[in-house]
Image (cartoon, rainbow over the protein chains, first blue to last red):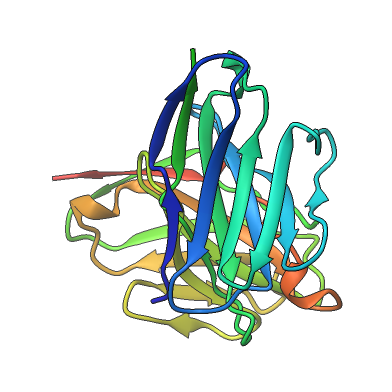
Length: 116
Length: 114
């Protein structure tokens, strides 16, 4: 099946710094990618929909100035957590659907962020 | 987004079939029924999806009720590696196409006993 990668797999940073997470579709092109966040023992929460070449669409309650999303190509979307705080520590997961069609949505392995 | 209802947890014995139920009484005509599973500390993995007819693939079978208000994911022979959280999700396949979202509920935690 199609593969979605994320980098880094885990990151530890100091409070107040910014962290960038990359999401790549390795063998297909994706005009739309999705970013989720998951806290321990909870389900995935959709943060935003990333659209290639245009602005991301954020879910209600998600701060667009704090979670910057860039989708510069059909295979790469990035999420930058700006001025990270300990409460931003979470498991961030991206997902993509092949623009060629089909219902299947492919998920990355996730990035675990720990803000000290 | 239409909602789904699943049991919080289920148990199964290894090498026995598992039937995971999902209720979606407010499903619309263009909603696809998706199943994903998530192992600890991993991203979700696609299992199967369907619209109206029952579906089979190498991982599982999906049985969809005639009125589409419920469905059942069937693992034919559970293994220890099948222990995971299973999510039943509806995705609108109508207008909006690829941007229509997968919204996760709480899912069913499946435990498999050796």
